[in-house]
Length: 423
Image 1 (cartoon, rainbow, N blue to C red):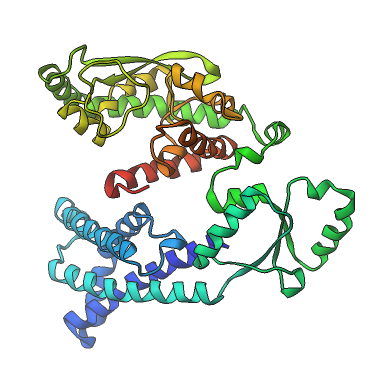
Image 2 (image 1 turned 60 degrees about the horizontal axis):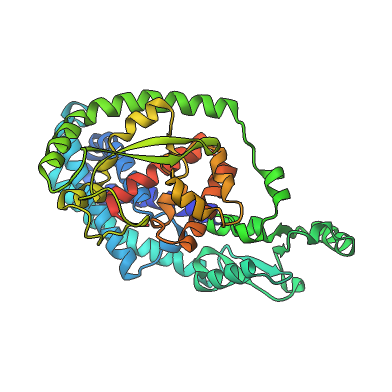
């Protein structure tokens, strides 16, 4: 259901963009000259609209819970439009032969028209979602910590489109059951009868995964991993490795001048130690490797966890860690095959020993670690065992669902972080 609503949001934005272009042409050139002016602008603005929609995706504006008119959403919406307009101006002037015009006034008018109409559209759509339009009525059978967590989340976010009801006879569309219930002889006939009534039956782990895009590792038994986790996907692994090699070379060449400047500045900073910091990390199949980074601390020692206010980090180091430029040397790790662009974060071996107390932690090592990953774009950096446990929920989700499409989504979410600094 959330995918349908996301699609409606997206299609609505497309319609509002083109509707705004129509209104802009009428306002600027009048109804009599509409056909000629619209024909001249439809091609360049269609190209620009693709850019706008990408920026809106990067700003997380196609999440249903971000479709309303809260102050935070409005701020994100305004900033996304600002980035879109600046980007459009740059594209118009950098590629005049492609766009064939530089519509300064028309771009301003379109931006104002679109902003007003789209806010109204999104606010109205959210009202429809909350009031019951396109809602799925859900009955939960059985209690557990994860069903309680899901219920609370759905109650706080009615715009997502689920209504919790207490009885199946109240018009249920879906029944969420405990994982072992579907194999219980006492309930099989009952659940079988629900199919005839076109009522979907989903186990609580799957529903939790759908809602949160992570997995409740506390509720998962080892048999689940045997059934759900595939350790080898030959085409995917070959394609991913080829992509890693190609782009590590390309990006390595592009960032080489920046890397040289950083190396010189690091040498001149208050750091005591080599420019390149080498650290032993745990990778694929629990094998250790040496991870490369630009040194950001005055001294390479101290506690295992760091934070943004750590006084051991140099002034230059704070900038490098904030922008992630300290990770430029890891292009070499990617080229070597130690890590991939996408995958669970490679942790220090000392931390891994601590984290092994977390159930199923070893499963994250069945895939190659990455420069960025599903946990990194959905959760903050871990600074405790509890936070590492929360990140593992996202790592297991990634391992179960990994694909080239999911890797591309992670790439876009990583780009979103750089543009909007949101998680």
